[in-house]
Image 1 (tube, rainbow, N blue to C red):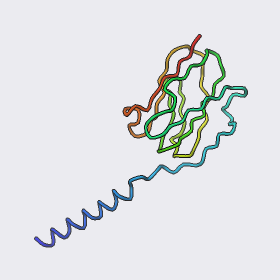
Image 2: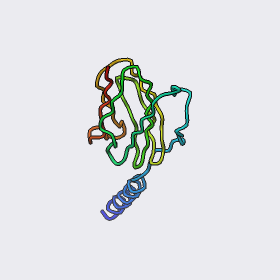
Image 3: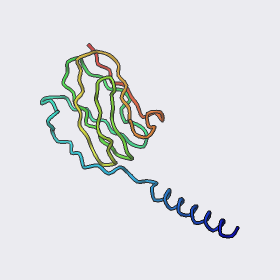
Image 4: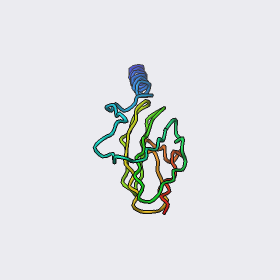
Length: 134
């Protein structure tokens, strides 16, 4: 009985150490600079959106149909992404202090949801609306 108790305590301690060391770990990704990239349209209006904790600093973005638009997504806390499923827009998941630049197709009017795809953040309210107007 003592041996079983000792084994359970050792396994519990090992599990505790594993969970403790995994907390706060962020996904390691290469640094993404906010310099013009091959997919950036020259002359595009650059809109900055910042993610922190589980929120975006902008809950609504309005643009005109046909306007050249690029979103510069800045992460100022945690691990986040910027995604618009209907427009096939997605940044990589980035860590605090990183940035990613994506072009936004504006050829169709409508209201589109953008959100963070990381670990349930959308459900926690990390979402907003992109409105493409005529």
